Length: 238
Image (cartoon, rainbow, N blue to C red; front, top):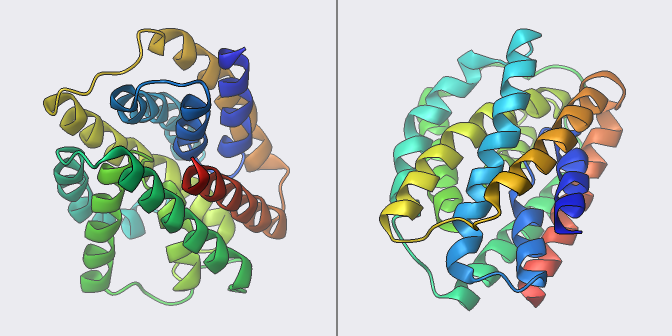
């Protein structure tokens, strides 16, 4: 049952360029998984989903690496630092939930450009934002894509469709270093990680194709907002 739910979550999230870390965490909390297993397990599953999505989007040459590089330059060390910090369980869930609710509100209210990125992105701003997103990602274990997408859209640095391709490599990089940080703190993933990983990979294959070929700009934006809203409410109430 848990593997099937992980696969469905992965499909829905991958269709909008996300790995599903937020919903993975909510699902693990529902099934009563230990809090010390939740973050590394979610990060591990993020790595599986984001690796496939990154490979596919990069093969189709839709990843804007010029925009992404300065964000990764600062986000990766910040994510590692965040991964080394262990928050008290209730503080962790509340912080993560509130940030997701804020991201959802930004996504719903913002009406940015529908097709292309507007202008150039300032290097200093990119590095600063990357550091903040990386730190929050490492602390929460969600990989960072749910924070990256609304930020880029709100600043008119990328369109909704561009963020679908930008999020997976950002999630992959930050989840990998965050996972290493979590291991150093003595947090280890669920013994069923391999089984869950197979399930989310199947879901990611289907979801990424759907997002790449069939979803419109408006559909992507509102699915992203809905995903963030549901996950945020679940974590705040947990």
